[in-house]
Image (cartoon, rainbow, N blue to C red):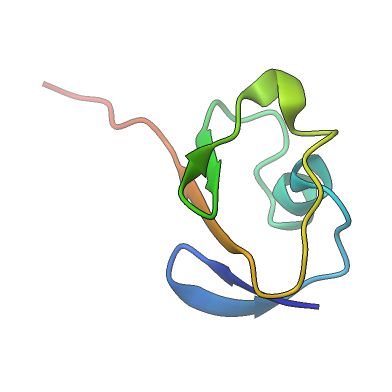
Length: 65
């Protein structure tokens, strides 16, 4: 299926947000996620289904000072 990930078109076989994170190499990284503009908490990522055309944002925290 085709989704938009961080503003870029991506083809994925992932069925859930958790699978997408693994597929994209995020593994256990601490990131914030949103699906179609709605925050997707880490505790719900396995249950959050991905559908064709979804817009997904993955944001890693910035470090430094």
